[in-house]
Image (cartoon, rainbow over all chains, first blue to last red; front, side):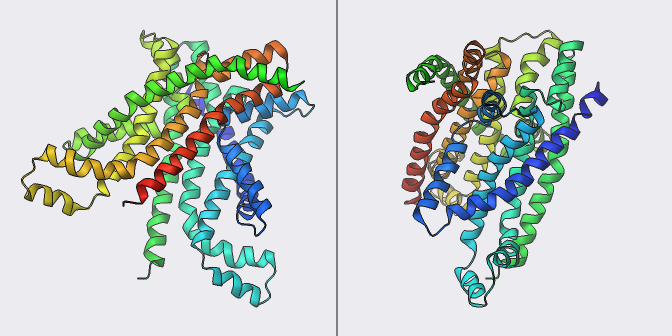
Length: 211
Length: 216
């Protein structure tokens, strides 16, 4: 039973990593929209964030999986899960980036503009390296939450850990054992991430708080 | 698909919203006091005992709520305890609420300056009185906005109770979907039902946060 359930860990990891990556990239657009000079772009960005956040992830998952199929967009359960969690992650990571941007001295951006840096260089060479230190602990914390949320994918039939535990519980009647195993697996996955986040957090504080 | 049919779907989901509110309300009413007990226990119990509380809290935060739900609903029958769906859901949600709230309450208590406690005992207040009249009011000011935020999150998470046959919003939406085959409008109706509660509630939290921050 342990082996069977833990084989599902690969899908837990795939969903988490893929949606985190999608969210990490789309999040730049979200943060960009939220801090755009144009009021209407900021408004759209804000509305998008509010709409995504005010509805439970399970509802979005069903909208994407069952709802989109109805209008001809048929996704496999795995694709639907990654799409849904990727979009949700983009909103939360976008807000984390925005928080990081707020800590960045505006002079940095003005100076890069004065030096003639393009937007891509500004983003990758000036903004990203500086805010990475402040945002990375929050990003890891969010990643841990995302990993736990990936359990929802079991409800649309992705054969990840929770789905397999559920199967085992129903076929063997040993529900307690099955769910204790899967619970322990989630804890084991999150402990190293948490430790890393705390270390990164203390390290960044040690290095960069001057006064 | 006209707008009237869609509103019809929204109306059909409202009884489910009542169940969701009930589940959330009971879990918060049990979870918050439990969190206060946990928070105090972690900082006051002698060493091996407080670890047990830490363990309970860490499991509550580290294991997905979906898995906690299954543990109560499908796990306990293995040892011949057969809870009803609602009892299982309330147990899992209470555990989760209490675990997250414990960390919030602990950090808010710790954020009250040490001098306050010293001043209270210098003024002759007993341990319990200085907690009740000096520490708790100041800690509450810090803890209230995040606890309200947690309440909104728990309300959203009540959608998970769908997996253990509780007829909340998602369960009703799923049935409506299989009946009408209009999955997209039906689930968007469910989204609207949740948003109609969470958007105003978040606005209230922001307002309270601003108000309380004035006096800190």
